[in-house]
Length: 357
Image (cartoon, rainbow, N blue to C red; front, side, top):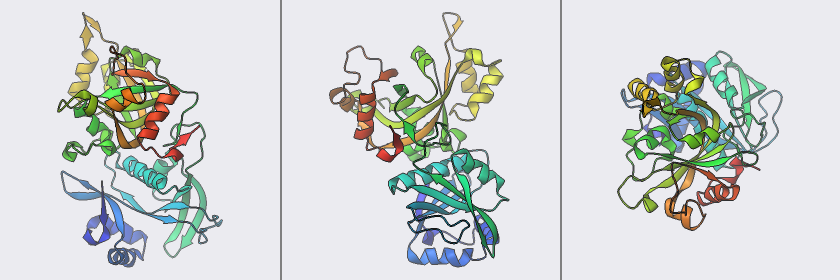
């Protein structure tokens, strides 16, 4: 996803036709944005080089007076123009995450957007992540619904609260992932020395939800709402102490094992939506054995809540936060104390507004 000036975008692109049809003033508005240097988030599908997603956001602080009922003055992010050509790769979820990221960077209290009732797919998407129908806007274009998300409201529902993380009453763990899988699964956590071309147009890349599959027995302890620090292991280009880094924070939705599936096809159907593995790779994982017995398989479904603003390296974990300092430390999966977890968030420049105590 790129944040680009309107001036580099071609208004004649067929992608914008539906917006022109919905909003009579769209062309005039677009040209004004081209002239004043405004920017928008744009997603380009690599295989076709075509626009598949567009998002314009702006900060507002005044009351919203052109809707009924009037919404009082607050600092808000308005998703002024939001369109995604959905085709099964969860682009919509990735744009929702971008809206949330933008809101936290601006310390906004709310996020809102207007949508015509006919756009049922978009309404379903935003409702899933805590947007509530609060008002109605009527113009010459027709009647639009005003959906608002309170960025500070915590309900206890993993999806409605996304991306807030509650740090009390849950377990905290470090979970490792190899470099070749990391960037494909967590594109917003890409390291500066990595090649963005490895980020593929697949559901796992674009989605808020992720599925992590492993054989680490410690994962049997995971429960819904537990928090995970995603730890990208060394790329072997230098000492692991300086090449292994914490990059992201995720929240566990559910954990399944082999016994939770009727058969291999049931496992593949569940895992393929949000994992980075192809069918043949999932088959190998299902059939993996140890001394003639099936390996203990753990399938972790989680939400991708935040990418650390500053990556925290292994050396810092050990010397400053007391994580993994023992010689026999297993870095694949590790339980953390509350203080260790919070220290990593602080060291990683995670916005405090995302944390619920």
